Amino acid sequence: MRVPSAPSRRAVLAGGLVVALLTAAAPASAAARPQTGSLVLVGGALKDNNTQVYGEIIKRAGGPQARIGIITAASVPESQDPYADDPDRCSNSACNGAYYADLFKRHGAADAQWIPLDIDHVANADSDAVVAQVESMTGFFFGGGDQYRYLTTLLRGEEHKDSKVLAAIRAKLAHGAVVSGSSAGAQVASGPDMVSGGESYESLRDGSAPGYFDDPTRLGYIPQGGFGFLRSGLVDTHTGAYGREGRALRLASDTGHDRVYALEENTALVVDRPGSNREHMTVLGPNGVAVLDLRDARAHDSANGWSLRRARYSYLTDGDQYDARTWTPRVHPAKQPLVPAVTTPVPADTDVFHSAANPDGTPYSFRTTARALASTRAQNSATATTFETGPRFTVSFTKARGFAAFTGDGTSARTLIALQIDIAPH
Image (tube, rainbow, N blue to C red; front, side, top):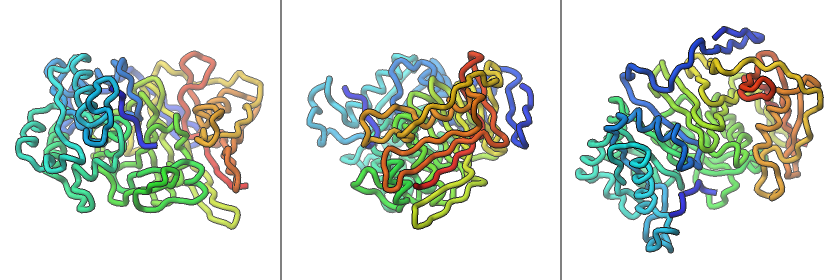
């Protein structure tokens, strides 16, 4: 089958910002189970061999006794898949559900079952038989596709009210179950103002609007949000691969949110006690999760275009933790503060958001520029620009008061804390 894709320590005082370094390696799941459940949210493109993330989901669902309910209603139904009868080429809700069920079993779950929901079977969301199936599960996995289909199937569309199945999953989460998801399956965990589409350049140029649009470049959002499992910040996915930092910052500014969790591919944000005043997070995987902090940010519209000043960008990597209530990153003890040794300037970047209009662009440009700046002692600020013009936006990265960087190999930047971000049109 084709995997479904997304629609197109010590306390270190750094200028008033407290960055806590863990004094001991802390596992993502504590020995004592929390009173409420947990989330494992992946930024998309979860690889079959990512034993770290699959293993974490299964462990939190009961280990060898884990029973995982697979929901793939974000995929097209069989009726819309021209390859529905070809097991090697199919990509629909049933085919993808069987794929993930087999994958979870191969990773060690006692059982994994597809929950038969999609836009052709919306009535199943209020079926007592399907509710009974859900209640027999100890964990859940939401697959990728289009997050709006989850609203149609599980939130009764424009009513935006829990179906019986979603109510049952919500109750299971409250009593200790793990709810996981990748791409759209992570995005739909959002609270109010869930993103529904958009590209970074068009988002900066045109702003956001409520709704779901046929134009995939237009920044849209759903004011009522998704399932509301994670409400302490907006959620975005595929951030590095698709250069979505720009759209995430614009949407947060437009809708009055002061924090975004920007998830990268094949990497999970594990959330313990979601929605409580003890909400706590851990990053697992080979890439990272960016936390965009807009508490001190100021946006401005002028004849030249939109601008944003004094946003903060923290990039957390494997093993790093984050306290949502206190806004405190806790860097894994295997990483040490980086002492910049590079003396060359940061390379110029003319495609900071990896534009789809530029097939020759360098992936992960935003992150690459940020890390290059952290690694050099030649300068305290750097700029990168959008590929598009009319206007062309310049993104400025600054090692302002509170910035800190950490390394795992002693030379290259890995984790970044509170790098200042400014965006201006030219």
